Length: 337
Image 1 (cartoon, rainbow, N blue to C red):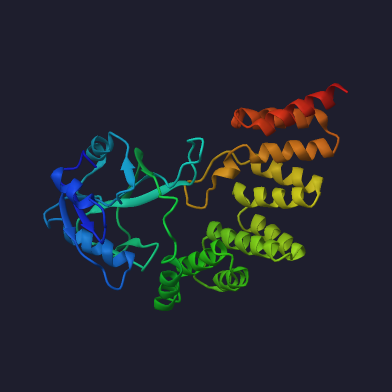
Image 2 (image 1 turned 180 degrees about the vertical axis):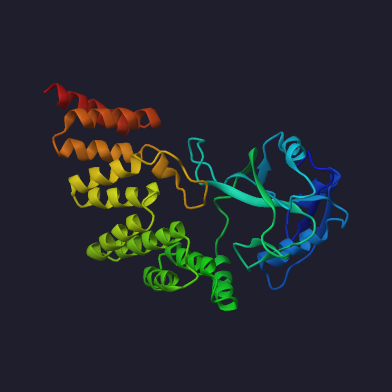
């Protein structure tokens, strides 16, 4: 954030020397304990620290870092007619340094007319009439470096509160079901996401597809293989333009030895070449996994030439993966007879 004119930080309870370090750098730090804790309240308190005559606000957390040059890009595109900017956001990085979840965020906005809503997974909500005048700006990149040791303990009660506060919000219902999945509460996940799918407000096919996939994986965990397959097929039908449901279906077919189905699902996934910039997009589906599964399926189907071709494509995407390289040698040997 060094390119900003002013930086304002709301410290909500750090116990190390964070505040002193920030103040030594000339940053304005306010300390406040938010009770009861909720993320939207904290962000609105932080927004209130910004002077009223500020033109543009950029909201980040301390574990998020803009790549250099973001201010120059903003100055090139921002006009008084605009109210909000969308930018590219990398939520996490994989062990090899490649990007994990990548999507667009909207946390650059005019000083007035916005407030944060929802206790967790908070969103920047426009308070004016209609929709805010926004622009997606290529080249502005914010990287998130999450602490892998950070607890998610507060997420579930806050999501349950969010659904209780606004039972018609389909996004919160989806997130609640997903949180049950993360915690291994399979039955609660299934029940919550089935209710999400029944909501009239649930209209975004990509998110509905994600709910179907979490239901399928919960059934897998419970040993309900037929139900799992049924929901995976529904997920593919809900959003056939996404790789993720096809890759999940391919994995299920691989695990159950359905090689023709595995190959078909991989082919459907690989035919999708444009990665969507939403939080639904998952790194595995855009890495070497589809090619790897396709190669394995072709091998079991006796299609050795195709197995070698897919195996080579998988190695090109993950050149340091020894298993993929060994598989490729095996396919090539089988092809030579």
